[in-house]
Amino acid sequence: MLPKNKQELTHVGTFISNILNTCRSNRPDIEMTKIWALWQEAIGPTIAENARPAAFKGKVLLVNVTSSPWMQQLQFLKQDIIRKLNSALGKEMITEIKFKIGSL
Image (tube, rainbow, N blue to C red; front, top):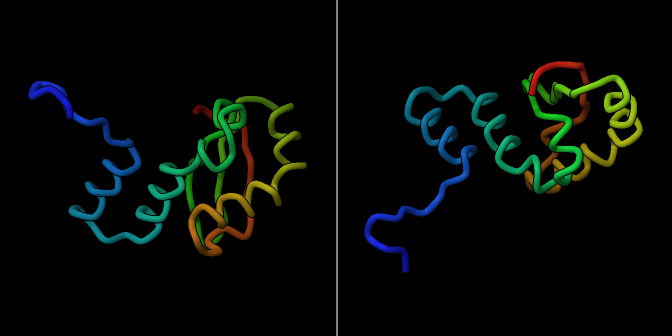
């Protein structure tokens, strides 16, 4: 049991999802929060340190990466990443990933 002045931590993806659910019902935004919430666990901490989901359009996930070498490496891992994310999401939401160098 937590002391009275301590609160349980909430994952940022859950927090964002709750806000989006109360503000609007834009489906891509809700789906994107699901991807943010499970990203690190689904793909692992090393990749998560160097790549982050940036946008979700249809079934295409746009991912920002830190450098050209990481973009090249992730191209080789793309199908595995898609499989892991869809498995974590419980359905096939992603059919393609596009990588670009950008801020995390």
